[in-house]
Image (cartoon, rainbow, N blue to C red):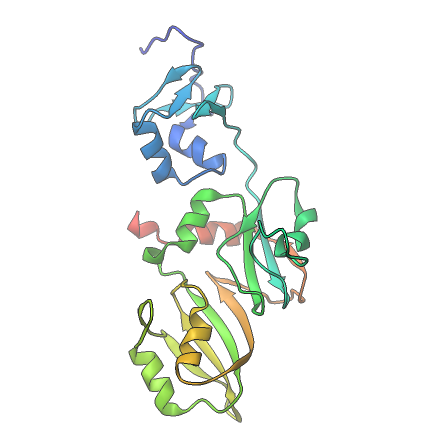
Length: 253
């Protein structure tokens, strides 16, 4: 049995792995927590812990860089983002921020998962779940996104072929997974499915071919849609939706 000179660590049915406890505090993912533990940056009840797999209870005092951690209740909020709101949280000059639209959802500090630019509307997820955020924004998990794009002119079939086969932009190769007309009678409206989270990637794809986008709407993100959610409104995710999000990339872990 392990003994310690400092306050003893509780061993009961509510024990959780230290890396999960740290991730639940909202500062990082479990993998990053393992790195912090190995580096000796984490202590439990005053004793430095560098053993992976170590378990703690809610009664233990866990510190990271000498700062006490407190696991938060995990919150998941879905917003149908309106136009002219920015996703950046720390812009002191912005008068319209997406965080202002969900401020009454909870007392916990939540933040957007990824970003939609100021002019783009649609599905935007907020959470304080650091581990899930890392997964949903990391390229290796290939999180699916679908946008409706309203163009200034008809999208040529030859350009559709090129976008699906791939093009070179200033930051590398990119291609759409699926690209089709939304309305068979209006070839200026298209649906594009893409996994990349690169900045302004959808706009830059069409700008590459000389098109102007006058409306861009994200209608799907990681299995979430804005069905029955009017513009500017938010709702909590269901337990089923949260569980499905957490299953993303499970086979890659």
